[in-house]
Length: 333
Image (cartoon, rainbow, N blue to C red; front, side):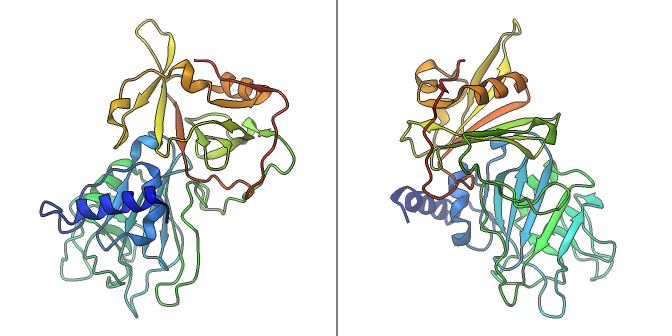
């Protein structure tokens, strides 16, 4: 494990071990790098970074093998939580579900009026996401238990009809997803096929998702740029990113009082001084991308619905494969 990841995990553990931590897990916000240590979260722990993708379709991916729930918005991971699923003879069903009903204060009609806070129903016969016990192993009657505050936060961003994918096996631990930064499933619950660039510099397919919020991911780890619109990847490109900052940064494309577009930083934890700062030319000079790809992105930008995530997380690039950009350009503010 790298020193940065070790420090991040230690900070998370220290926060959750504090006396003020809730019994169902402390309220923890985090840049996306911290979610990479999701397998080491203890029962009741979770990470939450909603500003990474402030809008777009929500997908909840429940991995029974790892006893984890990962939340994606606009195709990008924004949260990871420990869970407790159904115990023996009360197995949580697998498959693709939609949220059928929501109730912040709900009681079971099946099990002695047991409380089910922030209930999000997946089946009419009683399976739901809700706040509940998290002993570190499957112990529910089929529902998916979440930390109390996490379930509360999740409740605020979901809508009826949102997709919930449940996979894996809590007993046999069948391997499912690796919990990557990008969603393994589409908002419709179908697997997303990862397609590499091969020998091409970039790919631009805006017709795959003509409208919706735009998320641009700049992966320093992979030296790649990925563009998602309404949860669908519409572009991918090689890049030259000369930045050794190990942290994450989120930048929103907005407009000032006169309607002039500008890029403004969002203050992620650990980068609180970023908040409100305007993107400067020196930072832009660290990024080079194919000229045509830049022009395609620039034409698709819309103030108020475009976000850039600069991260060390991987976006699924070919391992170790670098491509020289023949006609590169530096973005302009």
